[in-house]
Length: 187
Image (cartoon, rainbow, N blue to C red; front, side, top):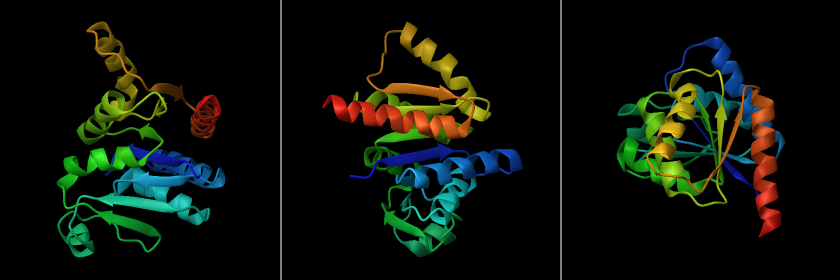
């Protein structure tokens, strides 16, 4: 069974360097025969999705919309033909649990409050089989998540998931896959 890796982060990122980093992540997920899952939005997740598609990988977009027309017109999200869309009709925050329940792991790049929402759901609701990868130095909320995690742990809310952090996008994807494969062998 192919591993499903969610890529979450800024849906409006315009920084060329960060877009290139997302591209590397998407291409690497495809090279490792993973399925890339996003919220069907633009920005860094879309950059990773484009790269995965270029690498002949499967891309699933979990859309907040009811249909493709609403996906494009209401949300202004891309409708590239490489996506396999799942239309939830559950708005942006409502689709997040579905996106995360679809994934075996989640990689976070940059981001703002939407990414923070995705992160907190992943860390709180996923089991010990799940892996969260944080790309250090990617800006946004992702760079603050280590501090946030320390605080959350101090106030008594631990998490069952495994955390992997790395500054190099290739190494991050490799570590996420290695950890998932290690967990599968333990079962």
